[in-house]
Image (tube, rainbow, N blue to C red; front, side):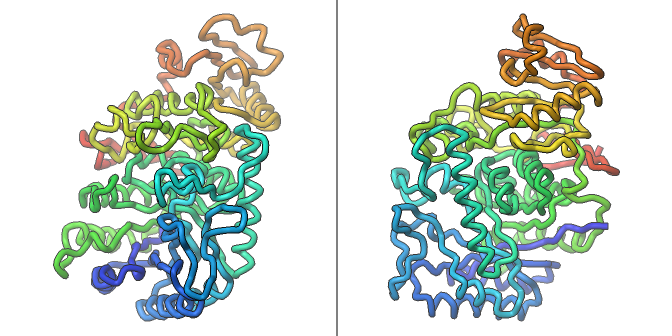
Length: 499
């Protein structure tokens, strides 16, 4: 039996927020761990280590382990301590946080450090440290000499593997991002970075889950979830009921560790408010509650296979340039948009056909935020997914820039032997079948299964052909090896009711 560990994001980096954090840590909430922001980028190494040891001592007193969260360098160009130590700027002009061994050992003074989070790391990579300024143009890693989606992606993988290896040498047991945008889960996971998705925030929680859980399942990693109370620049930007239902979703969807950001929103004038009370209620109901399933037991009906190209629908209007991998030489095209059209179909038209995040800043983004969209048992995989991870699929979409020959061969075998239905453009169709593709939508039977070959993933005929796999509008279904859950989504998209 498995249970979900429950945590709370608390702040020791801003002294005016410590009081709210202490009130919630002493509230009777049942916690397994905390996530703690700390600021060190303007400190000497000696002072940074003093702060780290104080944090470790504090959580020892509360009797819980913790995860150290680093975000401050995302918002500061200058990151040099008074002793001259460079916390984020590198000789090659790149900007990313340094995790010194001495600091990591100080954080783990009492052997209570679970790991480290580099908050919104994917955002800094794709948007070139735009948290510093919209025109910062500071790359996290150097770009390859030749620009292509695959060249940039493979260069990023090499750099990330080296970065994660160096961090591991400091004694850090686990390294995670915290993704505000629904990108880079698979590239991170392939380098050993734990998938950690923000729910609520500006995304559909279950679309974020489908992507992040797909990465965790494919690469045999834990799945973490930050239930984030921010919406755009509003905090709290979500109701207590929405927060509670997102925590329930985390439990029901196989998340390993779930925490809420943040304790600051849960206290008003030194009194625990409705948000705090709902959080405490959830911890008392779900702390230690056993499950017969976890992320490793997911068995999706529907799969999406694509190269992890960093595109989520960036509009280029005011924010988030329409580029890939933070590289001005790479512009998204119709191959990268296919993925968004697939989600539009799978959510019965609820997600935007051109983006999957409210941060897109187009007329669609004026719609009131919803945490949940109707969708049937879906996971996203990358271009190297192995056959054994796809065995449960009934329906599979092939889209994007590139899929490896080995993965395409595995999909081909599942069509012939398992009865899988695959939807693809002609570019991923086996060579032996291409001569049979004539019409804009062509169904080609092969063995026990079939290929549906299309020019566009927005075809109405395509939707009719696959309707039986899409589930019901306003219902969310999760399938595991020995467990299935279906929830009815409320009209405002904030609450789930078991069906």
